[in-house]
Length: 287
Image (cartoon, rainbow, N blue to C red; front, side, top):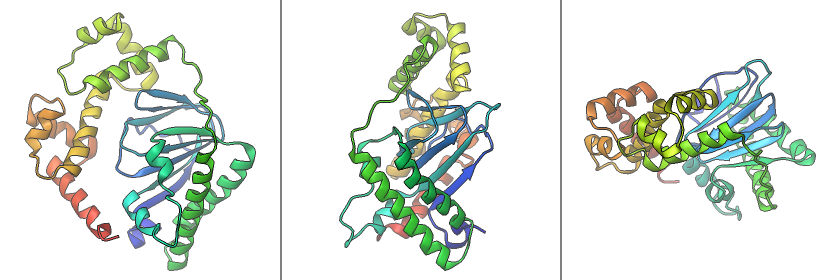
């Protein structure tokens, strides 16, 4: 039993060597992703990051993201998720620094850590993953101490000048990034392949091929996921707006189609998801 299961701690930490295809996804938790080794490119929104060992990604979670790893190479990474509201409750006086600032101001950023920074970050992540698998009160408190130490290190790292390390993309990658940017801007509209092809000045079959090759999913799977992602935000933040209104606003013509896809992508019906999010926030509302 983990700390999450035993104490209902709104945080997770884990290290894995197993390549898994989780597809494009989003979540309300902030995320810390550390890349140890392997071959992987990470798509966050309309940006493609080609990762090197020692790369660290800080995310707010709500932007669609997806790691795409080479299945023929070892893919080792450590991932930490946490509820920012819960953590904000931990950072009251006498703490002076706003340790969530890197997530709020840098949004989704990929940082290449130097050897000295890696030597400070990696032991903390290892210890957190070990403690997270325990279920006793002492491990619970030690885990939180390690987590605050991690946030402090990340805060310091974020204050140094950050070099843009993005590798110049090839033509295919550039076209996919342009297409994702277009979908981000127009996802609430009625979109078809002919329209996309006209905008991109490229053959629609070629677009379908390269998009699937780079992202691992189809253009319309990405479009639907983007709409569902926005619906999750609206269901959480606009409790007085009806599910039908939200369905139309995020680009669906038929509420029944929206509800069916929402459940397929999230595992819950829209009304069930809204109820769960409301219940999830209650324990921390006074913190």
